[in-house]
Structure formats: C-alpha cells, structure tokens
Amino acid sequence: MSEYRTLKNLLASVMSVEVGLSEEREEAVLMASLQKTEYRNRLREELETAFADSSLSWINLLDNERYCVFAADSDEEAKEYIKEHLWDRIVSMDS
Image 1 (tube, rainbow, N blue to C red):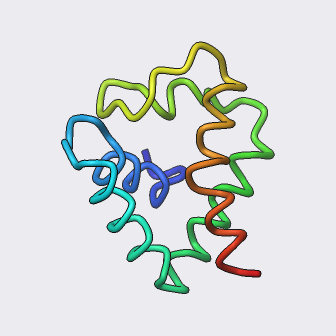
Image 2: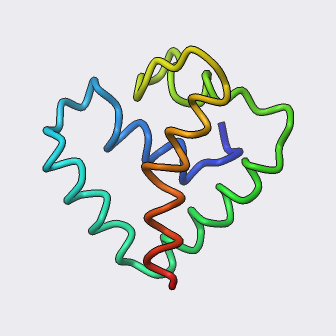
C-alpha cells in the first residue's frame, strides 16, 4: 500500500463516501490540503507516476476493500475522475 501513499490516503480519508463529508466540506478539506506546497508537490509527483503506470487499475484505485470514492465502469472513466477532481486543481494552483 506504500505505492501512491499520499494519493490513497487522500482518497480514503477525504474523498471516500464512507467518510460522509458533504461535497462542500470535501472541497474545503481538499483545497486546504492542496494549499500546502509540499503536500501538493508530493501528490503531483504521485499522480504523474500513476498516469504513466500502465499496470495501475484506476477502477481499483477508486473502489476497493479499504474505501470507495467513485464506482467507475472503466479505467478511463476512473482516470478521468482523478484528472478532474485532483490533477486539474493541482495544475491550476501551480499556474
């Protein structure tokens, strides 16, 4: 579980449906976390590695025994979810 540790921790502790945060609260916690440069850079590095990892199951990354963030029908749909909810925000903050 150490691979993509920051990403998986974020998914489990903030974005998982089991956590029960409202969309507004999830957004606030996510943005507060991303305001921290060191955290944002670590997450960016993990996402860059994940996007290049052809063996990664994006479906399993979002929905597994530990947590469920989003039940995607395909790896492409799951990857797009991560891109829209995390990657795009990181890129816009670094611009």
